[in-house]
Length: 390
Image (cartoon, rainbow, N blue to C red):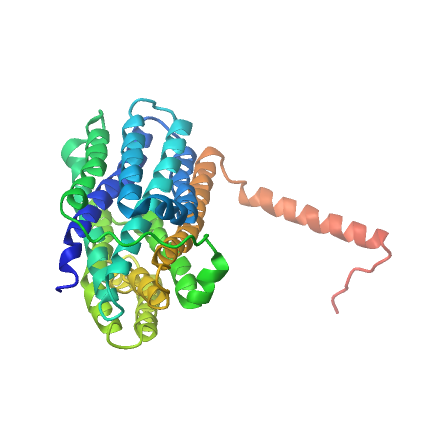
């Protein structure tokens, strides 16, 4: 713990920053719905953040090299704060898309800065535990921030102001208390091949984690609604997954610091698979079985990013931690973008189902018989013979 103690100001900074970002992600969707934006446009606004996130991951190493960790963090936090407050000034879906794109670039840079800072300040012997604590701060601050929405309400400018204040205040702890800023990384360009060579397992793992965790956050409420859970039960269902993610973060990190990390990654992946199969084939519509299943899924699936990131950083050379941190976030964002596209397509499909009635069964049968007759006609024109039944 003596090695982690100097990083407490950085972890406090991360908590304030992540809380503000988590609040913004939920609030923007709800506020967009209240403003009358269509479901498709809300999906596009959300995708803007993920696209910006991928862009930020690609360029953050250059920024860190040019101006260092503290200045990078300060600049990106200020821009993200301005983008958040600007959204209340212009209520337009395409302006919001642009602001979420900017926010994605900023937060990718901020998270890569924090994670490379952490990885450069610890050793392989306590790396996963440190990242687990960081992930606990992440989950705890995001969960706590959500209660500002029912407490304040989604109308008015108050939540926009609170988000902007949180992003600005995240600068205070590291500005006043932190002196552990690492040396700026070498001039290494973003190189997918180099990241793959450092750790193929972590590369694939982060894509999978981005896909599964983003799917949980975006499609989890839809799944819960489809099986008949009430609004309160849906909230409990989602909370159970997040709480599950808190429970095993540190224990899995602790053991991965002592034995082969790949074995712990394998165990966590297998546990996630079993939990998913339990939800699909056993839980059915039973409320408590679904709570138990999603709790187990969160417990095993959510620590995977920290474990994969720690494994990649184990093999990073001095000065490569910024590249690896940005790269792992980039691969995570690829999975998240895929999940967002699937969720957007689902939303559009549901919209079209409500906009147009389905073709009656009898009419579909007539169309099918007509297609068969047409196929038989063209078969005869081609000189073929229709097959006769004995």
